[in-house]
Image 1 (tube, rainbow, N blue to C red):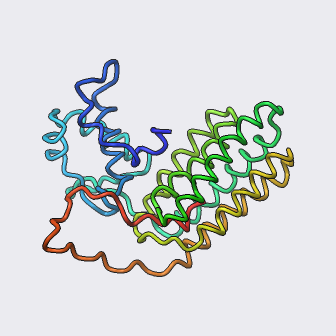
Image 2: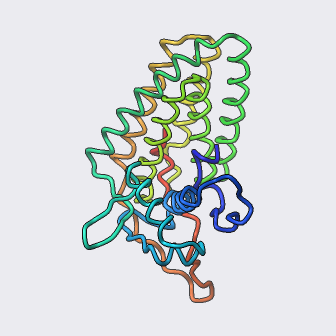
Length: 261
């Protein structure tokens, strides 16, 4: 889960000296990926190579290699004579990504409902735990926890299919879609409706109804896209109180939880 949800983990900068048998460029990539998906490096923001190299105490060579990897995955974009920037997704790309995610979620759901009984029971235990955690997060209006558990719910279904290419494609789509959510402030409207949909999906898995599970998951993702499309415009970010200095590396409070499938 850590690779799927790197924005929920600490920066890897403090772990560099403890890592063995891992390329330096990969460590730099994972560190920047975490900062992008946490919202510390925001969509449209320029990534300063010297600053990254200085902060991680590495040369600029692994930083450039890491940025090339992030660009190939669609998370950053290089502009001639300007530098490298965190990507901003257009409305058409967001629509296309949601459509692809709906197909992948649906396929994974069909596979999950067709698992042998013992494997389905193992999966259902994880899904039920995730639903309970989402309920607790909704009660506490804890958007970030809800968002994480929501993704966990879908990820365990995807992983249960045992298809590595499916998992890789799904991870890439989720990471890119996360960039679009960083443009929106937290809103907890829609959490209850989303949880009800998750319960229906889990019930379809429990009943081994593969067609219904596939249909429910595809519709669930489309509903999430429609909520994102019709979400109100983000409000201005409040100015920090003079008594409380602004944190230069805050946890993002701009995740669109109600638009998450």
